[in-house]
Length: 285
Image (cartoon, rainbow, N blue to C red; front, side, top):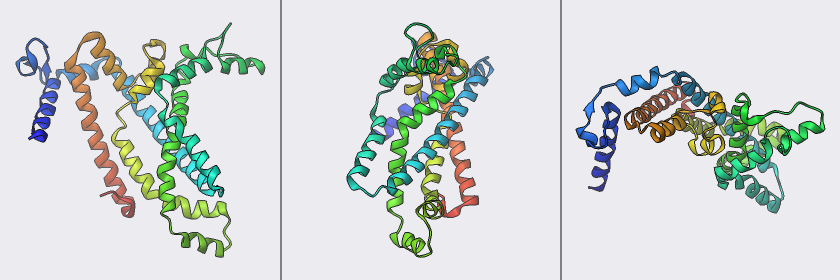
């Protein structure tokens, strides 16, 4: 019964996306407006930029964190000292628990504006007589700054997943490589990487399913309401939050949320079909 009631509430929430929602009238008392909420969002001048930013940033995050996770896992696997290996794992995994608010403060210390009291990065640029940058007024570098933050935050987490997959590889496979005269680098390239494909494929499919969801917590904590950075950092989730907070537009925000879910589902299906087409042995279905 609890499951049925929860499902009913979920469907009731979806109805808001197709209504001109009025709090005083409630969900079912508000008037229907069909697809007007969807059309309003897609026809707005910000829609193209927001959709592009969401896709671009998530592709960067997914690609960079996967690459970092695989690289760190292989490097950790090559460490022979058990104590040093455990300490290294703990150190690289620690950023996963750091709050986005703390990350925001750290970036402010590093990237404060030019002039007196500038951040550490600009101080370093001054040492080498390079031009300083007013980072919080320049939207161009921010996709790459956020990507570095995500790699620092999730690289260790992803490495644990890949390291678990590496430990499942039979030791006999590496012994055969050693008998054939392969070096550690060659075994990592020829044995470890190919055998990590199933794990990477599953993570890619899961990532594709959320490719229309921006990392709201991290992006909003770092960027906040600094409109000068919206051109390169504003994603669907931050846009919806501002629309709900400033305009109280429940209908449009519900429509955007439904749009994210439907597109995410379609993308997961497409990703799985492509995976089955080209690599059946790594398919999750």
